[in-house]
Length: 420
Image (cartoon, rainbow, N blue to C red; front, side, top):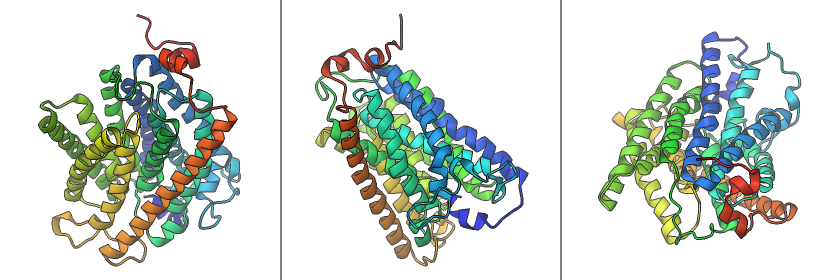
């Protein structure tokens, strides 16, 4: 559990069981991005843009890794102040293979947290898919990591001001899902809709690829949530259990709504419901029990389904791969519900206690709402500023109309996804 970091810092004994589990979790979380999210997104775009999405996710993974080593880890997890860390561990200064972070080798804790820094900006790709210049993607995602992800990570998991208030975010409702969702929404609004959006067919070109990626995400999410216990213990086991239940419930709920509304259940619907269930349980996964996990998953399926319709059909915003209505809204919903179902006095729906000095559901919900609003507002403002700045540096964020018609695979990378 990332909120345990202040107390873990006092421990100084290596635990081989914890180490083995977090080694496994680290691989699982990287597996979520490469290849899970990459394939999930690539199947959802049109054939002429399949390689561009794979390229963007791959490049972001490489960039985030180097920036995390250079100073990202230090800014997120060194002492610093309530808002940002310092540079004392830049390039892992002073960290050796004997260094410990709680019961783990510190290089392992560094690696585990790095995988979260990788997947978060990669999620944003879905908001501007099929229309952003590759140079703009690289610059925006790099700057966004530095100015959005690192500070928010410190606020919540690095002992910052939200951690001090007792915010409950076990594995990334605020740090990952709200930041990525809001970043994607702002990008979609700034870049405007794809040419032909709402009139031309923009159906996924390869749902088989998408379902394959979805399955990888589901499996990888056990490392994402279970690994956030930072130990091989009951917290990790329960986090895995509620994660699985919420994913299943979100899938079936989305499928049922779609079946009733449109007459047939879709494959795209059931896998999108799964992602909604996973994203929504993420902040609550270490604090709630199985019955609450079921409720959270059902809630995710309902709320995220209708949020998707609102964004696309009513507001006409081309968040291409539904990042905000699934991840952003799911992160908000899950962070809020964590403040309720963490209570130990809800019978079968009880959880495992409040955060910090909070004593009631009302007090905890107040903290949860402060966290949601602060992260949402900060991410929106900084993302907007960065997009405007990158637009100046790259002489426009978007490719031109001719390039969009041809597709990013050819115009940006001079390659084709399929030569049949």
